[in-house]
Length: 450
Image (cartoon, rainbow, N blue to C red; front, side, top):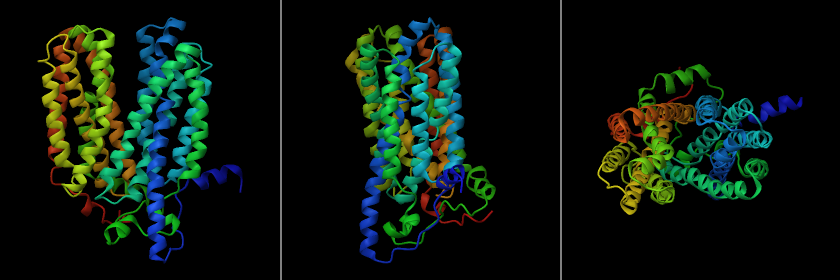
């Protein structure tokens, strides 16, 4: 077998291993590997952020050195966003039939290598092309994590596990914001790409060591049988016809499309706050940059707790139903986005409280939409479904950037707030239709049926 054939074989999902018969050994292995899967995927995806969000901290130094305009730099960001959205969807489709252990590591290793190259960059075309390639690898981060979470945690507990994993976004973003900022100040912008890249090369190898495929590949029973004592539902069965699985669980599944459409509008609010709030606070509320930073500091931190709380409530209170929690959280998002109209100029403490509330409540639905998509699509197509929600989300983010700029110029910042509030209302209405949908029935179909 050639080296290329060995790589392809490694990337394929592992077939079931001979079953472990001893109940005590099954319990020991499950306990060990569930902890290992959770900390490895959380750490692994946080590492992805070190070689993705470093660009934000280096942006001013790069544009100053090469005299790029905001429009020129915006081209780098826009092309990368589109590539990321497409990559996330395609990686999701691949992820349902790939070994998540190697897919997650490959994406991180590829992104790290691109960052090494990017640090030698000069010229707009170079930055556009190489950052797009970086985002091509970045799209491989979420789907294998979804595959692992749905394989090792049952439908009635996955909300809590997903909530823990979801904190990787904020952990990675916070670490690189501080670390890259220090490196740019002391060593120059190129170090902000080279140093994290070296760490992530090591991290990619570490992920290969830490992770394995689904429980069945280790001879363990499916997680539904282990945790709930019932027969397994669908699995990511690579012997099932691809088009039949995709057509049934994605194309022909209206609930996956409903939550994907909802994600489009949720991302408008989330990305709008992240990208535009500093400028809004300075121009509309009279804040200086330091005060704007303080007012926004709690947005991402609150998101960690909001995501975990939403997962816990949907598991424990609603027995795996994601709709009621998503709807309730979106209702509060609408209320607190509307509250931005009422906060007087210069009120840092009040504005901080509003942004903390928005962060807490918007990150709940943002996470639960992915969980619900995995629930509705079953383990046979969970990765594809979450890839689709990601595609819709980043299309919303792309629209948000263009529309926010146009509205701010033509109608002022009140027009922007109306845009965010109406987007939250649209997400609320779409999620309301999922109120009574449960994951249990959806996880009990035969993936080989077409």
